[in-house]
Length: 143
Image (tube, rainbow, N blue to C red; front, side, top):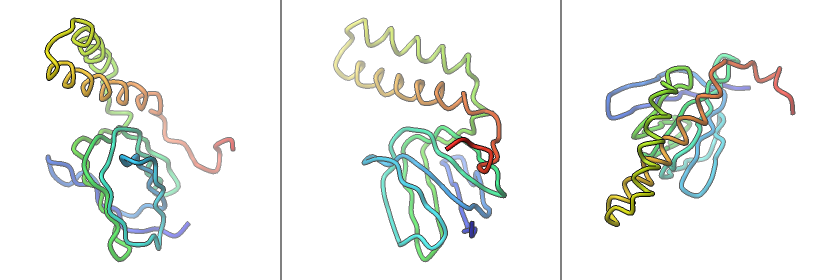
């Protein structure tokens, strides 16, 4: 596959700047796959797993909120939160999940419930992505 330049920039700064063959991210309307020569594009991000294929290696990450843009072949991912699968603290994600679940069940105020549901969704994404900790050669994946 032909590579393209990918930048991942979070509120904490530059997270990744290099060549990639493919990027798959969840937008608010569904997943999108980006490869070299993709048309110009701009979309808000949802919550979900991001997949970056670079140097033939597949890396998974939890990607939450933000924007993705493609301008003249340059791809910029600007998530609110981006965490590689191997960096996710599973026990912390589980604790956040349990805490948010409890908040939802306690019938707190409407605002508290909305916040708790957002935290619950984030924890679920992080727990789900943590299952993809090992780099996988895409050619070795089953179809």
